[in-house]
Structures are given as C-alpha cells and as structure tokens.
Amino acid sequence: MKKLVIAAIGFALAVGSACGDGEPATTGPTGTTTPTLVAPMVPEGWERHITANFQIDLPETWEAQDLTVLPFEVLLEAVSLDFRWAALIEQFQPESFPFFAIDAESEEKITNLSIMLRDDPIPTTISALIGGTEDLFRGTGIQVPATDSGLTIGGLEAGSMRASAPTGFFRSELVNYFVQLSPTVVYSLVFATGADEFPALEPVFEQIAESFRVLDSP
Image (cartoon, rainbow, N blue to C red; front, side):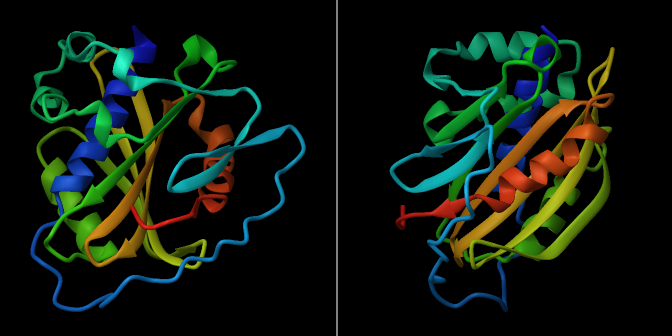
C-alpha cells in the first residue's frame, strides 16, 4: 500500500504541474530549442532506457513499468485516506505518462520516477510552471521547501521543485524536474520516495534527471 500511495502522489504532482501553470507567459522561449543529443556516458551499474522521444539513464535496480495495467481504482483507493489528492488523481491518464519506473530494491519498492508530457496551446515558462504549481498546492498540506528555475538539462531550459507531501500515516518526498522543449511543450520528471529515504536518494535523482535527453519532438 505504501508503494501505491507514493506512486499515486507522484502522479498527482505531475498532473498538478501540467495544469498549474498560472498566467500565460509574456516572456520566455519563442520557439523550439535545439536539444543537446550527446548524452553522458552511462555510469557503471546503470542502464539506458530509450523511448520514441527521449532517453534516460537509471541504476540497474530500477525497472520500467507499464502503467496501463494499473487499475485507476487502485490509485484512488491508495489515497482514500486523504481526500485532497482525489481531484488530481481523477485526472490521471496512463497515456499521459510515457515512462514510469520503480527502484525494485527500495523498501516496499516505494521509490519511483514518472515522466509526463505537457503539450498545451498556451505558452508557458519554467518559472510560470513552478509558481502555478505552488499556487495549486496551497491548502493541500504540501510543503515546497525549494525551487530552482535556472537549470539546464540536455541543452534545454529546465527547473526543479521539491515537495513534501503528508499522506496521513507517513510523509513522502518528491522532486519535480521541468524540461522545456518549446513554449508549449514541457516534460515533467517526478521522483518520489519516503521521507527517510530521500536524503540519500536526492543526488541519485539529480544524476538521473541530468541524463535525460530529448531525441525527437513529440
């Protein structure tokens, strides 16, 4: 159950990020950015995962999962103790998440990564996405202890937002990396784990995010 709760909250954060971009951007990227296709060497003990549109490196203990076999009702049941998540989980669509993986060796397999594609006709910026998501989470009990809108991943503008989410009987820690391909297309990489596990895993999440490379425009 703990695994499902943290996975569900990761999905909720990604969905919230996609719809919480606040006001349309008035400044920022004006066209598609040319990504840096050259990826770093795959570290020893890691494996490169390649999809139709992007690639990402993960430790060998991480396993890609098929979200289409995860019943929607299971996610709702996982967060049933906290109604604040229900509205976001109800917007969950497996096809919006082209990639999901779990660390099979983490306790109860709770550590996971979900990647979501935001393709919206309204232009936005990294700062607007982060600020809008923070606004969306006000009153939900989610704390946002740190944000950074000045990152670069694979030659693309990027940013990050760390969130701490209560779930009744334990707290989960999440990091959302935004990677902007164009004014209207943004990838959201959401890492989720338990509060006790987070300090040791935070640099691993960062290293995984830095390996992300867009291979083709979606």
